[in-house]
Length: 282
Image (cartoon, rainbow, N blue to C red):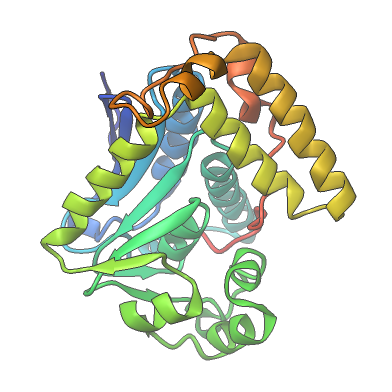
């Protein structure tokens, strides 16, 4: 299934949704229209039972070069504020998707590109990937909430204060990305991982995501309560006995829950407080 947008593309095939930032002539710079379309795409994906996992990519040689500064040149202070809010809303929409979201980063991910990638559950990067938080150098503020939760407070301050470029290997060391692959290997590995996740029971995956995201924001006791509630919901809505009985067989990881009710979309209530809350450069 494909959807019609102007600044992004969205396709769902074999339970894998691929959302592509599609302004290659502008290095996929985030403009107002893209902010709106990212929110629209996230809303459609959250309601699509066929989409089990989401990949976010960039068209052309970079992932996203940041905000579209040309768009901002003639904006008033009020218009800039409204534009920043639209960016925050787009990042939050990605972050709150109930499905696992994987950013597949090649080339530059600067400013808004870092925030889009950071709003994903994790990042797979190519050896050519580069990350940069240039907000302070532009005389503005942004990316102050997700980044510290990813790399720690002290390193986040260094990256924000200096705006220096982080290459793929350092990003791996810092925990900004999960894996680094060659340019040729990245799309293959991303597709393999997405297919593996998509083969699992979708409700179970969504509940697991919700447990992690909510659990890290509360006490250990509160987190265990979150997990117990998720376990109970999973038992009620999935064929867990079949999954256990098939363990070790060729179909061990292919069980599906058939629930299409709101219970099968646990993230749609905005419950994902996340380890990377909204509040970012756009």
